[in-house]
Amino acid sequence: MPRSTAAARDRPSMADVGRLADVSAQTVSRYFTGTGYVSATTRTRIEAAVAELGYRPNHVARAFRVNRTFTIGVMTMGTMNYGITALYSALSAAARATDYSIVIGHIDADIDEPGALEEARRVLDNLQSLQVDGILLATQYRDADELFEGISERLPVVTFSGRPRPTADTVALDSYRAGREATEHLISLGHTRILHVGGPPSRNEAVERERGFVDAVLAAGLPALPSVPGASWGAETGHRAGKAADPAQFSAVFAADDSIALGFMSAMRSRGFESPRDYSIIGVDDMPEAAFYSPPLTTMRMDFDELGTVAFDMLRRHIEKQERFELKVLPPTLIVRGSTRAVRASPVRSECSDAGQAVTADAEAEGAHGDSR
Image 1 (cartoon, rainbow, N blue to C red):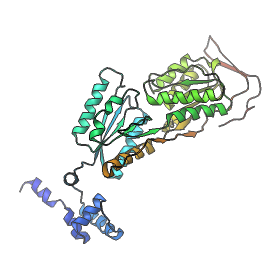
Image 2: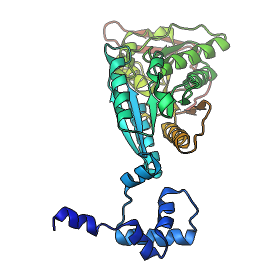
Image 3: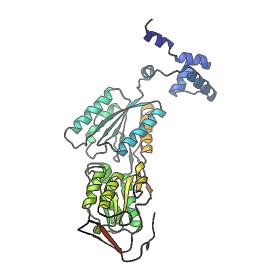
Image 4: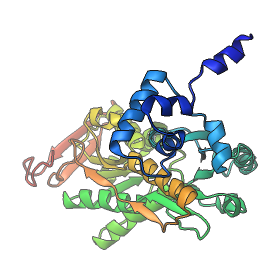
């Protein structure tokens, strides 16, 4: 007998599990699919039988029975960064917990790059050809609407965007609130000259964070300094801004994400300016490394774990129960660390032209307004 036939014969079946657990195969099926009641005592017996036999469910057979593949397609665009990888991790955990699989299609290009939109359509077509049960679409671009055309008529779709759509469920992290609350934190420390170093202007998150910054500054009656646009979410964007910034024009910085903040601090340090001695700075995301920056970075925590869990649950419930959801927006959380402090009274800064070093003189004693660290 060929080995493959012998291996198939030796593989335990659902009926084998039922016999060992002293229940019917239908009860074992209900246990695995979650489509009917199975008592706690019976579950314990089935679990023991599964462990003893080393049984693994036949997902192909299950797919034929229920006309579903228990597979979710995920599409993302743009340079890989902390947000995307954290989202992948959360989605993978949610899929494992519910016995689904995910298939990822990633395009390492912005939507406005030549050929990117056509490549995005090819990725979406490929995901649909794999017979996925639904699609999670993470394209936080301002001009991505046409990607949705036709897909939601055939499949459940959940998007990661702050813009609700009538044909797709939507979940998003609140970038506007992150920008506003980050700026309000700096204002509460007495800062009146706040510089914003932004993210890529084609991304919804960058636009919303800048909008929150501007609204907070205007609401406080402060002058709005011109924002510094960023070419990417990376540290190089912050580094360029830090090399070009005039330290006499600001006392605090709102960086559109933690990596930008890191680059800005590095450039300023090379010029002799240290945070929080000479300026305060706050980022967005709360990357794991942010707590170990020098100084540890104050930031707005964006909960990517919750984002992935909520999005996956929305899509699964749409698939299994035809439930639909309105836009869900998840709030950020302020995490105060050592990079922000109360503004020092009337600081006078100058940058020595010969050595590029900063000289800071205080008109009043340090700590006149306290220290937030």
